[in-house]
Length: 211
Image 1 (cartoon, helix red, strand yellow):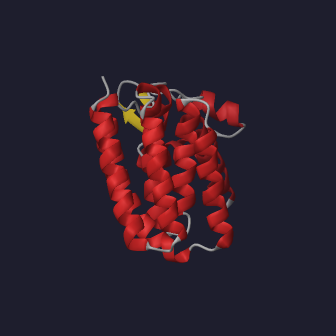
Image 2 (spheres, one colour):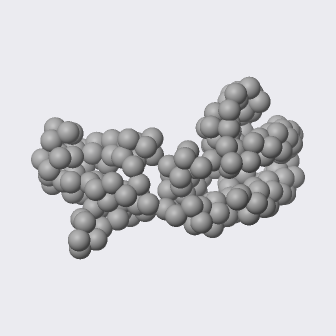
C-alpha cells in the first residue's frame, strides 16, 4: 500500500469512528484544513477520506456548505432498518452452518450482555453486538453492507433509540434474541432465518408505534 493510501485510510478510519460515536454530529461542517490539522495530515488524504465517507453515505457535499456529516431524518430510520434487516436474514442463514464453539461463545456473551443491560441505551449497544456476533461467519461483503446500514443510522438511534422511546420493547427483543440464539446453537439455518424474519417484523412494527 502506498503512503498516500495509508494516510487516506487513516483519515477515513478516524473520521468514520468520530461520526459513528457522535464526536462529529449530523449536519456538522467538515472543514478540510481544520480536519487535516487535527489529524496531522495534508489536505489531500483528508479530501480522499471524505470522498470515501460520502460513498458510505456518512458525508454529503453541497455547493454552499461543502462537506457535512449526513443528517438522517428520524422518519427515514425505519426504511433503513427494514432494508438492513432483510440483509441480516440472509446473513443469519449464511452464518449458522459456519459457527464453531468459539464463535458461539461470543454469541452467548453478547446475549448475556443484553440481558444485563441497565438501560435502553445499553441494550441498543448489546443488540448490535449480538447481531454482529451471530452474523460474524457470513461473507465479509454482506457483513460490510449491513455494517454500513447500521452506521448510517447509529447516531440517530443513540439519540432516539427504539429501546429508549419504547422501554417495553427491551424485554420483547431479548426474548426474540433468546429464540434466535437457540436456533443458531442448534445449527438450524432455516429456523434461524424464520426467527430473524419475525424479529424484523416485530422491530418495524415497534418503530411504527413510536410517537
